[in-house]
Amino acid sequence: MADTKKIECRKCLGKGRIHGYSHILNGVCFACDGKGYQTVKANYKPSAMYSVKIYFDHIDGIGTVFGLRARSEAEAKRKAKAQLLRGCYADQADTFTVEKR
Image (cartoon, rainbow, N blue to C red):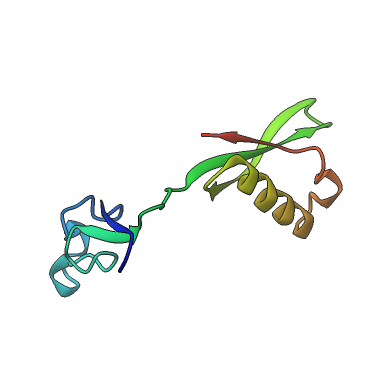
């Protein structure tokens, strides 16, 4: 593969095994196949957690509705708006904010 790099496996923290799953294939991490690292594109940017917040009239304050993973604040806003429009907060889809955790 061209333009790749190795990063520590986020699931097993570079150990290649997960002790809590030692009863399944001796605990080999499925994410990295027991290597302890994963090969990703050189321009790989890990995602961050964002909180989606909405103003609620009945409590006269802002509350966190849900969290999501995104690589940038713009992507978090796009994902949050799409999810709000699908759910019970569709009427407030234009009044939300996202905040990096």
